[in-house]
Length: 152
Image 1 (cartoon, rainbow, N blue to C red):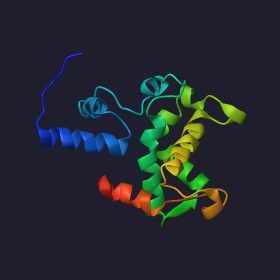
Image 2: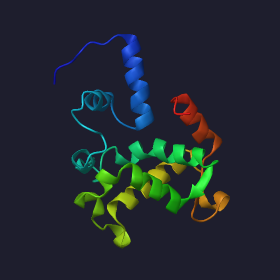
Image 3: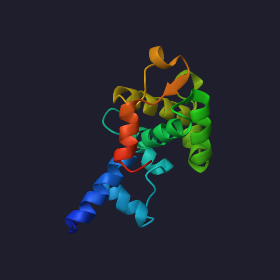
Image 4: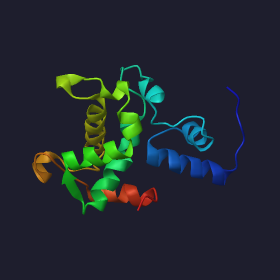
């Protein structure tokens, strides 16, 4: 792998964008150069040692939080899934993401559910006992994440 030099300002910007999208700095550059979209079926198929797709769940977290924020802080699971499906329709209609996984759920919904669970574990989304079953609610920490990453 070849290395490139960048100044501190560029490095900081790459780092901030990467963190907000849940991807690497290299993927930010690849996306900018239109070499690869981090939410493509091929990159989503790359797996970590635990067998889970790389980056897809982390990439979805900021989008989930933004949807909740724009909906006044809370929305039903179905609303979030619908909006994410519309946003990533080209990706989620691919055969890979239409495959059925646990309990016959399409892979795209399964990835959204995992992203929500990661966001909940990070303290960005309230647990169901606080927000209600089937309702996703952003926490103050989730709002701070969006602000810190200049998403709102």
